[in-house]
Image 1 (cartoon, rainbow, N blue to C red):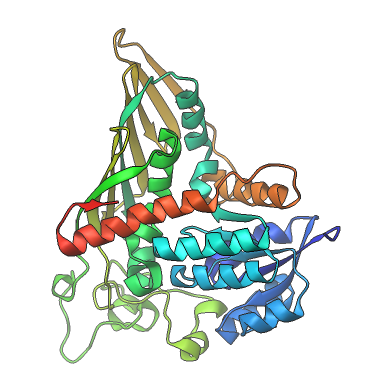
Image 2 (cartoon, helix red, strand yellow):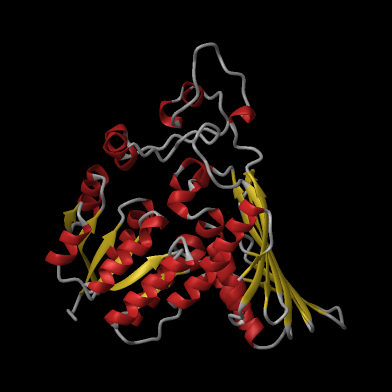
Amino acid sequence: MSEKLKVAIIGCGARGKLSFGAMLKDREDCEVTALHDTNIVRLKHMSGYLGGRTYTNLDEMLDKEELDCAIITTPDAEHERCAVKALDHGVNVLIDKPLATTAKGCQNVIDAMKRSGKTAMIGFNLRHNPVLKKMKEIIDEGVLGKIFLIENREFYDGGRTYMSRWNGVKSYSGGLWNHKGSHDFDIFNWYLGFPKPVKVACFAAMNVFRPENIPFKLEKDIPVGPGCSCCYYGKNGICKDAHPEKGEMWNEEAVREDGYRKDSCMYMSDLSTHDNGFAIVEYANGAKACHMECFVCGFSERIYTIAGDRATAQMSLHKRTIRITDRWTKETVTYELPEAQGGHGGADPLLLESFIRAVKGETENLSTLEQGMLSTSIAEAAERSRELGQVIKL
């Protein structure tokens, strides 16, 4: 292994640039030497920012480059293919969550990891959030006793990210229970000690972001969309949901390359997932968990309740508070954590650091592919439950 780790970024979108790219640029022990994307406009922009040789063909990059690591930040449906190829070329990989869009896809990546003997980590950055880490310490100390119930409610301001990009199309993301919920299912699994999930039920729908719910009056012969940056109603302040995307990576030249817009109209896009719902999980040890997602609101927050037979915890991720209430004495202990630097509440830098240290052999892999498969399995079952209207047994 070279003195500086030679790193490739596979997938040159916002996550590849603004999260991992920006962090790698500031590290002295890593060098981004190669970039892969199928959109040449974004690829050139990324190279101008980070340096590195550019490739539109992944096989060519893996054949030509001597890489220590690859960070995969493509749309979720490409995670499996890219990870398997990189591992089969002897490259350590960090796969931004989720691991894949199906449990079978996850198993294929696990098999490739075993063949290669390389480090493969799943990018569950929420595990590195200081608030959630503190809660894990409290649980491991036995303060709550035996946990039998967990619920969290996630509110996302306006839904702009997930309803305007590829994330809202199931063929790209595996559905939002996978793309978004895989974070939360993993936290449930992590807090409970990774018991086997046995049943999943889901109630979800697209209630708001539909053409008939456009929240303004249309003018004659003036259509909506296709993107906020080119929409009459968006450019003239008529649509309150408008969020025009700016910058070279998402301009009309980039759109002409592959047709992809990052600011597609939330009401007129070909969405195939939900804008609100509940997913419920039952585990073999009797514990139950419920994850709520709501993308139609004017604020962002993650709120957790964790019930044990000794105490109950209530937690706010955005307010960075944890409140523990004893079951019998009713006494309450409150933790207020300071704001951390870095993306996702300070989690992203710690995620990257844990991967680099695992590749160097300094620490163990803290987010295994098997754990990633467990999360995706729950998400896949939730999507199937919604589709069939049935409880799914795992």
